[in-house]
Amino acid sequence: MFKKSLLVLLCSFSAYAQAGFEVITLGSKGGIQDGNLTAFLLKDSRDTNYVTLDAGTVVNGLIVAEEKQAFKDLDIPTNSPYTNVGYILREKIKGYLISHAHLDHLAGMIIASPDDSHKYIYSLPSVNETIAKTYFNWQAWPNFGNKGQGYQLGKYQYRDLSAQTWLPIKDTSLKVKALPLSHAGIESSAFIIKNNQQQVMVYLGDTGADSVEQSDHLNSLWSTLAPYIKNKQLKGIMIETSFTNKVPERSLYGHLTPKLLLEELAILEYKAGGKGSLTGLPIVITHIKYSLLKDINPQAIIKQQLIAANTFGVNFHFPAQGERFSL
Picture 1: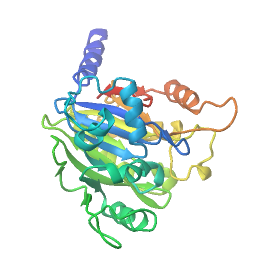
Picture 2: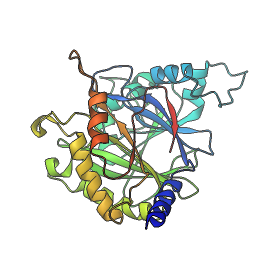
Picture 3: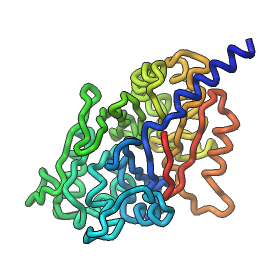
Picture 4: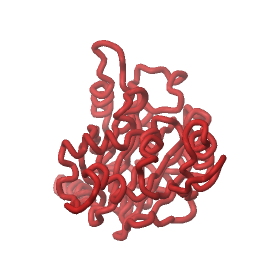
């Protein structure tokens, strides 16, 4: 019996041993810490071009990542007229996946836009519409898009995503679908991303729990992911946990706590095949809110609360700005 259990455990971990994706953390925090707001670079482990997962911080995140040698393997031409950060921004980032239009998820893209290169913005239709109306409108900022108010500079082109169709991410080896999430009355997104090896990973923007949001969006996402887990295709989940368990549900404003995340993982485990089906699955915790209170370390508390109640055998990871890791 022991040998059989050990074999199952080893097989579960082996499904995640070979990296399918590489991630660089441009911004790890949610909320008010400008310069370190939610943004990640993602690429296929066999590719050299990136797409962002949200864009709360871009240039400052690239500066920190370069200082931490996250790009040490990247071949940057010596004849490039740009700095390393400029070259990566203009030549290696091929698009932005924006989960929702809150400022802490796209401020970096907006600020970088005057010196950026031509790119696609990949989002659900409602998110693209809000970006065009609220930011690129010649009032908040010049219109660098290809639709919306006033003269359209056309640097960014909007690409609408759906849950039904895989859309290729231009100049990368990745494809993406987007499913809606509920975030305190606005539509947020979960991006399911696939590479040429049929491996997938999922990134969630801000989301509340179905039980709090009176929604079925996370339940639908877990149903979509379950077959990928059963087929050993899912390489990892990147999901927010903004607040500690001390914060009451009425004050979450469309976010998760460790307790709520673990309740959602229990639903995913059931759909994926029951006890043990999530063993070894990497769960990357994003969007932890920065606190101004003395002697309070939200990340340390959230980490302790998640690990203490981890009955699923998942591997929680808490990325730091500038860090490179694999899924």
